[in-house]
Every structure is written in C-alpha cells, then in structure tokens.
Image 1 (cartoon, rainbow, N blue to C red):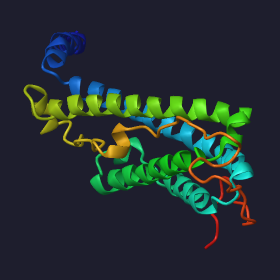
Image 2: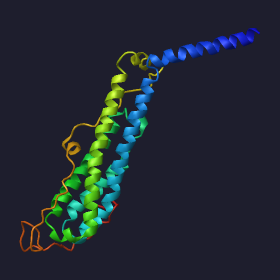
Image 3: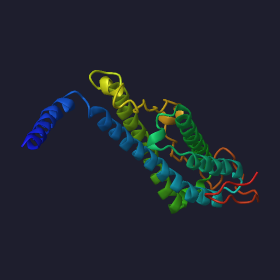
Image 4: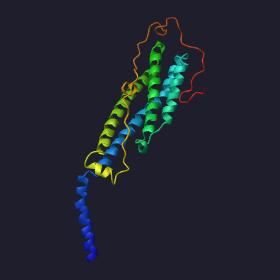
Length: 230
C-alpha cells in the first residue's frame, strides 16, 4: 500500500512539473536547434544540386568552346574541392570548418560566374538545347541556394539568441550546456549575388567582341566531374 502510494505521488509530481518545465523554456533550445539543422540540410541539398549540374554543363560548353580550357579546368577543380568539404550538424559550431566550407562554395560560385561570362562569346551555344536547359536549372538552383542560406541564417540567429536569453539561458548553462552557438554564412559578394545567366550573343556566328575569331584551340578536353592533373 505504501509502495503504491509512493508511485502515485511520483506520478503526480511528474504531471505537475512537466508543464512547468516546458513553460520555463526547457524544450526551446532543442526545438530551435532542430529547426536550424533542418535549414542546414536544405542548404546542403541545394549546393549538391548545383554540383550535380556542373559535369553536364562543362561537357556541353567544352564541345563549343574548346579554347576555354583554363576556365573549364577551374570550374572542375572548384567543384571537386567544394564537394570534398563537408559539414555535419555536429560541426556547425566549428568556426574553422564552417569557414572552409563557405570558402570552397564561394570559389565554385566565382568559377561558375567566370565561365558563364566567357560563354557569352559563343553564339553557337545558344542553339544548344541541352545548354539552355542547364542554364535554366542552374539559375533556379542559385536562387534556391540564396534562399536556403537566408533561411538558415535566420534559424541560427534565433537559436543562438535563445542560448543567451531568459529563461532558456538557465538550461543552456546547466542541463543543456552541450548546445553551442552555430556559425552563420558571411554576407560575401558571392553569397548575395547569384551568377548571371544572361546571354547576349553576338551575331554572325563568331564570338562577340572578337570578329573573325573561331572557337577552338586543339587543347585536350576536360573530363567533367574529375579533377584534372597538373
């Protein structure tokens, strides 16, 4: 009888304290952390989508712009580096790892921007339906990356603020002290501006701004998706 009474008392205490603990923000930190991690997963998904488009883009462009091996190589190498640097939810609080990830993605963004600017000199690519499809997909993906980064930053700011505000700071300093601030994407030029995918081709079938020049240079092709040897 005494044992039953003790169990009933314990159950009653749990029922009474559960709402109180929830009301004191005990669940706020893990809830906001999960939201930030979900936003991060979307960022990674969009970056992977971009990486998946690049091999076909390079293969299509090099077929009509064989004398642009330098920029094509830069894109391939930047893609290889960007896909080799990975961040897990557990390391989102690591400044060095996060900066390395952002730098690698920024280098790829820059290389793509230069490639797309260079391709403007090749009007024959305008008639390539595969390239036009890739152009549209890449443009949409860059926009989604921008949105995903923004949403991630908003979720992380909310989570980080929770770690320093009452009443959740009580738990952040005690029972949930393993939760640390997450890193934010810096507002770099590459982060704020997606590569321009706008082709104003010259006329007459020759590269704009270089009349009479014909694409082609006899240089060895770049293998899409692989890092060329130096």
